[in-house]
Length: 374
Image (cartoon, rainbow, N blue to C red; front, side, top):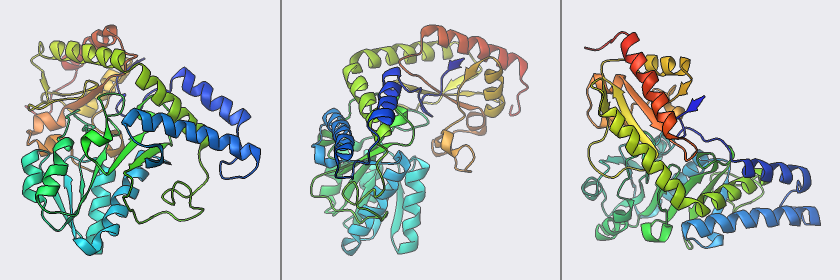
């Protein structure tokens, strides 16, 4: 199997699996319990918190663990907007946010908020942020094309507008792929997910800058500063911590490997007239390349590649069945681009041979499949 869908999910590292198994067998106590079994479990949670905090340049008490990146985004957006509703009613997100940000923001309209979508540029945000803006949310790396968005510039735009807004960024596709330092980005809130980083599914994290107030949207025992009530997924959190440790320790080598793979892939794609690379300038993370089989149906291409043992995606995995439009629609691409789009996403575990296998299968697909859009 040639797995090139790492933006959807990654294979857990062997040491992550070993860490989780050891936790499940030996340190299975509830971290909220007062006895020693609980204390030992709590130590594991805190060790993982230290690892993530160190990786993103945060203080340990600014990191909260939650059940997923999606839920962390929900908590950040709803909690921040509701906390500041007396100071304004505008919420600004980019036009290319992940569905869990876009749909959560849209739900605030039912509460009287004005939800505005900004073009994913500095100027786009400058035109939409005003003094009534209480929340700005902008992903750091787009999950369909790998585009790096100008999060670093947004805090100054917020201040210049005289807005009371908190700044949130979805870093799910960024951690371990590009440098992520929350203080340098100037954000108040940032979201992360373990399974995009060779960690387990079902674990996310939310950075909450010290002094930032969020209105809770989940209620229960008050775990994680009252933001994520519920028993900790201790094995998952331990696995997340191990995945972060490895990503930080191996960052330079992994990034070099990803850049080599991306450059080799783009070079090969440019040699084929049936392919178009969906990039319109800007900077891109090294693990995602979006291409179009011009005139073909992307889903047909995907299944042909699958029959050849090559696994890719036609877009964001979680939006394939949701009816949400692609970022390519927002880029004003024509029907041949949008219908034939394929997302290829790498892991440091991929090789140049995997890329050759992809193009061997792609050439077959282009020769065998019938074009739908001329």
